[in-house]
Length: 258
Image 1 (cartoon, rainbow, N blue to C red):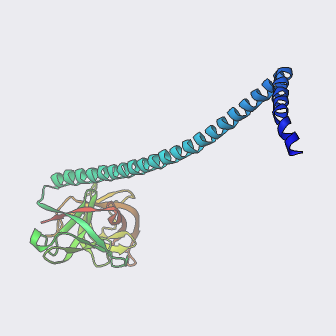
Image 2 (cartoon, rainbow, N blue to C red):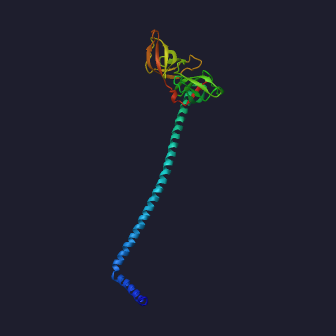
Image 3 (cartoon, rainbow, N blue to C red):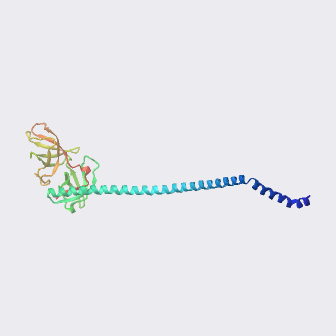
C-alpha cells in the first residue's frame, strides 16, 4: 500500500499544482478582488492605527503646550499685578512729594509697618524713629492731609496716634470763614470741632484746616470736611462733626513733620 502511494505521489502533487494553476486562471477575477480587498483592508487598518497614534501624539503635544501657555499666562498676570502695584506706589510717592513741597516744612518720609488690630486704639507703627529725627509730638500727614501725631519713639520706629483717637487735640479753623475751634478725636473715623461761636456760619462741606495755634501742627494742613453741625447742651457754642480727608487704613507711606 505504501509502495502504491509512493509511486502515485508525484502524480498527486502534479494534479494538485495543476488544480491550483487552473483555479487561478479560471477565477483570476475573484482572486484579484480578494487580493484588492485584503490590500485595502490592510491599508485601512494601517491608516486607522496611524491616525490613532497621531491623535494621541497630538493630544500629548496640545496638553504640553496648554500647560506651557498656562504658566506663561500666570507669569504675565503676576508681572501685570506687580506693575500695577509699582504704578500705585509711584503715584502715592509723587503725591507725598507734592504735599511736602506745598507745606514747606522739613519732613521725614516713613512707611507704615504695623497697624493696631484694636480699632479703639486707632494707631499704627512707622519704620522711622529717634535716629531719623522723628520725635514725640511730631505731626504725621499723608498726601491728603493730617493723620495724627507721634506718641512714642524708639531708635528705629515710632507709634502714631490718629486724629480720630479720643485723646487727640489740635487747633482747627474753617478755611472759608476763618472761624477757629478745637479739634478732638471722636472715634468711629470722625473728629469734633468744638467751641465754635453760636453766631458763626458753619456749613456742611466746609473745609477744616489746622489753625497753627500749636507748636506741633503747622498752619494750613487739610484735616477734613464738615458733615454735620450742632449746638452744645448748654447752648453756649456750636460744634461740627468732621470727616477726615486721609483714611489711615488706605495709607502706606506718610510724612513726619520735624
